[in-house]
Image (cartoon, rainbow, N blue to C red; front, top):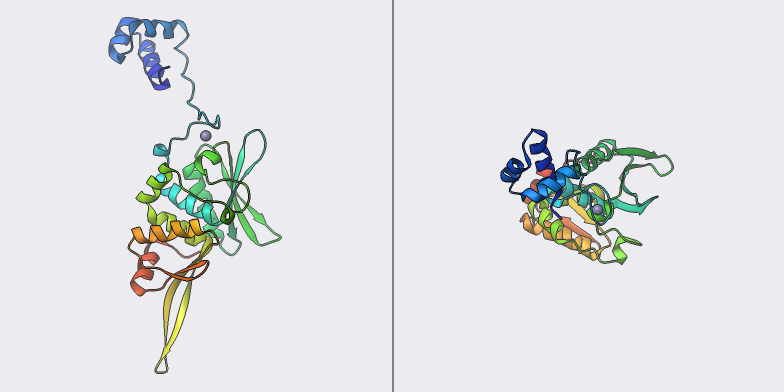
Length: 253
Ligand SMILES: [Zn+2]
């Protein structure tokens, strides 16, 4: 079967008044096919391409907002969940501490950039002081194939090739997303000869070896030195490294 865009192109040519022969010549499609399409009602709009896996509107990794996706992936790996709802629709939820309403708003905007076809929203969880950014779509398992049963640190978290490509292009955005979910920026206070000095420091904490591995690989790619503090914690403390992170990891606000 020919791709839908060819059908759409021929439809446009025929609609402009071209004969079968002229449309065939202009599009490079055999005349017999053009005639079949015209008889089959090709004048109507060609169907919207759908994803063969989930049946939702087609989501091409190359057509994604790749920068927004890298950030969303970091947020998801840190504090996100994909759950099945009804009729093949999934819900992506990303939890944000209630003290950071502007960060929560940015998370919603990022979801919207990655998936413009479905509306993202924000819910306040009064009980545990959390904000929940959420978006319903059929294709979350396609866009976030790390979706699975149980907690992330008890199953392997391995990126698909197309995700690797995006992370390779935007390692800073993956780091930003991971730090906005499972990281924080603190201060080391050092007293030397009675004088107090404050140094910025980033820390990232995640129980999944794979997710910490992704974080550290992205830091390596950015030439940012890091140190393993203990089993689950990674620290970035060297002055120039902290300054590099400060340039693209805005404070949680
Ligand atoms: Zn899909």
